[in-house]
Image 1: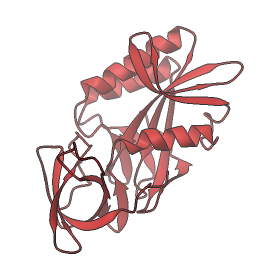
Image 2: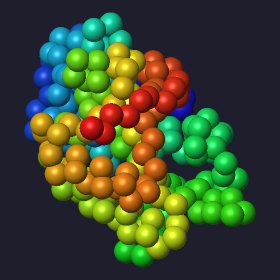
Image 3: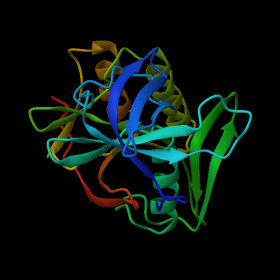
Length: 231
């Protein structure tokens, strides 16, 4: 996924009210940027760290920038939770994710029953619904999700289980937007119920995929699949 507009560099002053962040741009101007990440952003918040923002040309929006990434321990970490859907869509369409690389038609934001799924992928023999999540938390080299209790996330897993039982293929895809991790596991110490739901989904046949992306101010690129620990 390439950024459509050139990003603007600055330093994080602080994040507050979950969805706002004050940033001092390189020219000294202080701006308020929209933070799409509603979680705790544990392990990817550091006041004074370098950040990149994307400019927003929308007079109706109160904030004129969206916070895209932050540099932690020398690496860029993508924190815009809107980007993983775009990354996943492009990757599945371009056959870049093993196990999700057999589909000829890929659509975004598709309704099934009373639920809306991030991606629907099809070929001549099957239909697969994919839910996508952003992962930005690192604990001792392990990517973890979620970084805050998520009732909504558990409901997504339950819906995927129902979909699988109906005879369709269902998959959970985690996009890890940082390079300093080597494997993935659910954050049971933060939301044990989510961990239980993920393991149940796996046992019921829901596909679990975790891919690591390399983040830069120019683009975000899928690099590899990560091992999944579900002990």
